[in-house]
Image (cartoon, rainbow, N blue to C red; front, side, top):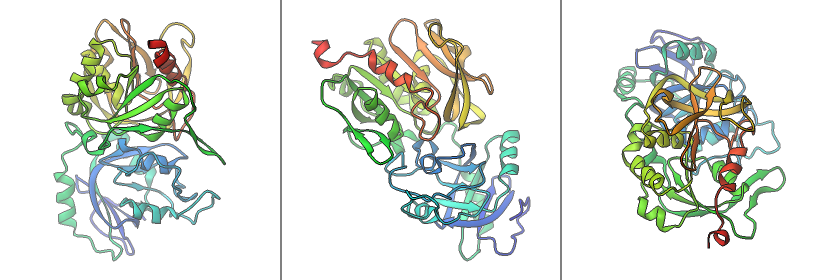
Length: 396
């Protein structure tokens, strides 16, 4: 389908991306039927579309895949990163083919439909991506009508009425409801998810702001015992669990909005010198707790090929890691206090990708060292965090 800038509907079009400025981009719908409003972003990964679509950090977003062949290996129950997928839907160039992987358990379109996510194919994704690069991530409605009938005025009102991610707390909508122990380790072909071994392990309390499951698996792989708690768990409740360290997870929305309830808890942990490790939104919240500010990015970073340079002195200084990213906000490094240093920086745009306190064991990174999908250059961060914690026997 052609990339149109008017409301003229091509023959056979059953899918529509309607931007808030009135631009209509027509295509072929698949997956779930209906209409949803959100922010349109793009992801440059060439693998792992199922992990991406189930990452809770994509709540409120419509994902444009720059790689043209999405859905070609089908879907399966192992390659998911959350119990409930949160992305609104996806936009792809080519029509989805029948699955070509021996691991496939379901056609991609059927899997999307079962998850309530809308798909749109036949789109000039290169043109849409350039538009996002130049003008920023727009608000829009993604719609799928199998009969090809769209109520354009109503859809435009929906797109224009969506308030945008800035100022929006979405972590509270995607966090888990209950405190729970986490058991599974990392996945390997033929063996599935590893089980946590016997023996004493340092206890990590992971605050779930919309976490990917592979983060918890990576903590287990690094040697931790993990308890996952909801986003609004109080400082007293966390301390009652007697953590050796606290992990701050990734998640969606504006960190300043989530910080209204999260930052006081994190500051309380810092005051008690509890070791802390934050990823993505957790990294931003740690920055806010330190006294820094966060800002909305023009287009954000989303993909599995982002180069990050290590600035911290010692082993690894100057090393470049290829990382997986998914964020639309960033810590403003210029606002960091004297006791917090910048440890990592993006080689794409110079934005902050890591911080560390100089007077206590607390650090965070903007990217995703657990990958899934993506490179595994940064797994050392889990080992760094867990190895610095005291196991129960050593703490006695």
